[in-house]
Image (cartoon, helix red, strand yellow):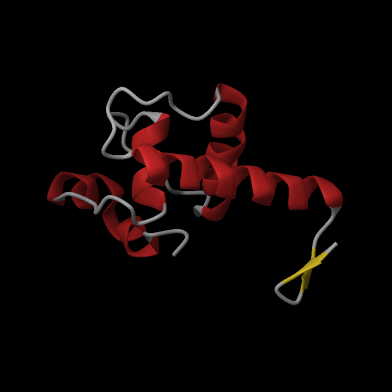
Length: 98
């Protein structure tokens, strides 16, 4: 599969589409507190994708749940001062996707 000039294996292509769908689902429901969240399998794939973009030394703050991580990793929600302190130099990697 070729996308944006990159060749992706089918599993990676499907993970990319799943990540995009989960993040856009969060975009659409960010201000709708009663809206259902993205499905747990899609969230798991999106979180694994974001984890794969972090350096091996980076540990995300323990207070972040998967939705917080996805919103902060994609720049939908800015990092707080506490986030930056906990992430240290790794805070400069955020957002992982733009």
